[in-house]
Every structure is written in C-alpha cells, then in structure tokens.
Length: 413
Picture 1 (cartoon, helix red, strand yellow):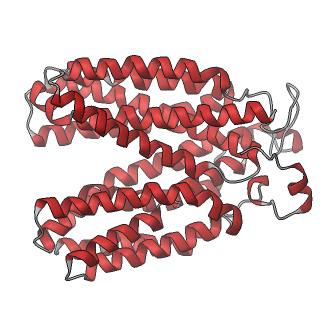
Picture 2 (spheres, helix red, strand yellow):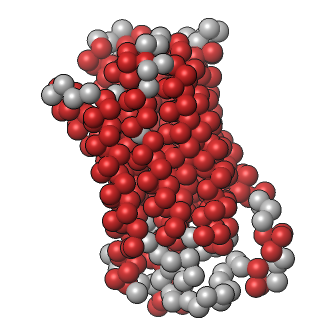
C-alpha cells in the first residue's frame, strides 16, 4: 500500500505541474493571441472575465462529481479537458471566438483545480502528515517551465497554434499516463478498505446522507478566509511591479524584481510549509503566515526606498505561501466523503477573490495613492490571522503527536 500511495503522490505532482504548465503557456502567448484576434487591451480585459467565470463554474461542477465518481475518473478527464482547451485561444480570430475559447479554458482549469486538490487531500490523508503545500509549489514550477519553454518557442518564431497544440498533446498524454496511479475511491488512502465500508465522517456514523450534502458553516468560513488571502495574491500578481515603478519611480527592470521576489518567495515557502505544518499545526501556519504577510505589506505601504519595498514583497510572499494549501486541506479533511464539494466552495470563493482584488485596487486608485490602497490586503491579512482557528480540524494529518496516530503513520517519503 505504501508503494501505491507513493505512486499516487507522484501522479498528483504531475497533475499540478501540468496545470501550471498549461496556464503558463496561455499567459506567455497573450500578446500574440491578442494581436491575432485583432482586439484591444480593453476588450481583452473584458474577455478575461469569461476565463474566470468558466473556472468558477468548473469548480462548482466538478466538486460533487469528484465525490461521486472518484479522482481516478474525474482528475484525468479534467486534465485532458484543460489541456485540449489551451489550443483554442491560439486559433481565435475574433473577440467572439476568443471569448468562447477562454470560457472553455476556464472551465477545464476549474475542473482540474478542484479535482486534483481533492485527490491531494486523499493522498495527504494516507500519509498522515501535511503534504499539500508541496503540490502547490510544483504548480508554480510548472508555470516557470511554461515561461521558459514559451520564451524559447517564441524566439524560434513558432506560431501560437503550433506551440499550444503541442502543449495540448503533451498534456493529454501526461494525463493518461498518470491516471492509473491515482487512488481509487473505494479505498481509504493509506488503509485498505472494502466497497461500501463506512469511513470517517461518513453517513454510516448516523448522519443522514441528505444532511451531509449541506455545506457546513465552517466551510463558508474557510472560503471567506480563502477569498481574502487569494485576493492578496491577486493584488501582488498584478500590482507589485506597478507599485515599485510608479510610487518609487524605479526603472522598468528594477520594478520587475518586485513580482520576481514575491513569486520566488511563494514557491520556496510552499516547499517548506509542509514540515512547518507537521511540527506546529495548520493554525500556526495561517496565523503567523498571515501576520508575516501583513508586516511585509506594511513595509510596502510605508517604504520610501526601493530595497525596502522589494524586501516587503518578498516577506509578503513568504507569509502567504502556506495559507491557501492549509485552507484547502482543512476543507477536504472536514468530511472526506464530501472533500470535492467542500474544496470547490473554498477554491471557488478564493478564485473570485483573486480575480476581484486587482480590479478593486484599480478602482481605489481613483480615490487615493496606489501604495495607500494596499491597506486593504494588509487588513485582510490581519483578519485571516485572527480567524486562523477555523483551520484547526481534528484529522490524522495533524495529530501525529498522539501515540495511536504515530503507530499507524506510514513511513513513506
């Protein structure tokens, strides 16, 4: 069983990397696709809302499907859909066709996002220790790989349809190759089960099946925290460079370091968060992580010097790096039989926050200086730290200090 659990973990890494690669390839080709479709920046900005809307719809659709049919069925299909859809924007010749293509890409991305996170919860349950953050770190590595591959193919003069078509073929092949290693729905991860056997948190404990379908208030609380934290990420993605350039009058090359510092800190932080969560618990990760992010943002708001602002964006990334994985993990472990539906709620509201954050900051700049608008994400970090107790869910993943848990924990690494 340990060997199959290790294989499932590797397969989950593959799907996260694939998701980062596919979306990264779309981002790299945005200027080329915009020119090919013959649209303005303003039209493109409006069409991107369809990408977000499709993703939100996909998240809400696939969550219950993952619970019903299992990850081994839903994750590969979602990955294939997301991979196939990435070629569509490259074929668009007008705003209408690009809008339809982005809607399809968003739908595939939303389906893959929730289904692979639901399976990651299942793998983490089997390991009896935190492993969620490392999956999100590998997603970032997939995006980095896309930027490198995309830059090379563009320098060679490859067209968007050719490059994105190749990405689609690679993605579909990878989705099919990794599928057999995914954990079956009928077995509890890390512990062989029997079909129809009641697991932890199932209806067999006496709760009516219809009641189990209701979303618990705690999940909505986690979703609200996810909205705030992912709004902060969206602000950093879209406004970090502009803040250093416009507020501190930095050069374009220097300003670009702000996003580089943030994204590098996010990736590095997620590679170490699992060990921190295993030692101190998920509540501490969110509480002190969000507090650290607030301190970093305070430095950005108040800094009169470029180096201090860059350091602030770095600290902001380190602080936020472990928060979202802990929220997804807590949602999935609340009831493993409804993990997909619960993760879809948290991921869906979080994704809306990531989309809304940059737009809200843009609107606020009409009323106040850009650096002052960052008091909004700073305040959200403070609220997330104060509400971090919601992340604490009784689970085998975070209870290794108990002797009975330690004896049954797999030694797989």
